[in-house]
Length: 234
Image 1: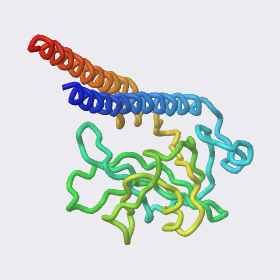
Image 2: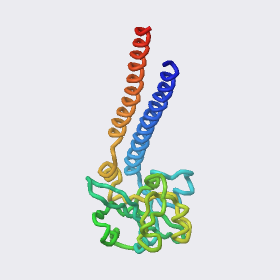
Image 3: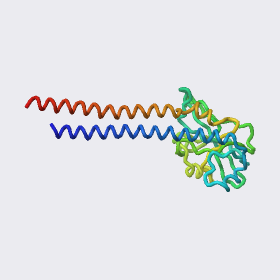
Image 4: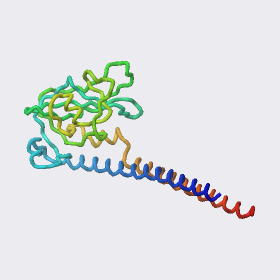
């Protein structure tokens, strides 16, 4: 009896630990999104400066308002897949901006609906290919770009996450590890519309912590009953 209780106790602790880990992960997601929104709000109050000047001054230029002199390569767009908006399937489009020195940075072209995958992939429309382009430097979404298999040989390129090195090789030159969010389409609003808010992540964290607690309480209750029944039958 005691050996079985110990075994199930270890199992309960392992399950509860896994659930608690998910809770802490959700808390981390909430903090990261709060930092993103706060950084965007600060940058929107800044006067834009040239990208070259900002890169020279700051080791991490994230959340800086910048002006980028570049040419938009609208025929080589990158589509970030699995982007739901109010239950509608779609993608987020990114347009490479080629700078005079040959390096590139991705311009966020916004969310595009793509309900039927049998139809051609949507692409962002820009008013002009020529710069300058004004916006906020942000970290790439989703923690990096991984190439998607559906468009591995052509453009637009479908990806599942953003990672600079593989994409730079595909584009044929240096790709800066940032995304330019246009100032005329504030990312803070689009982020709030297209992602789970920090409050929702905290709610999920409470649920995971609650499940972890429930597992331990159930185990302790059953173990106490089993021990009491064992004593009564002696």
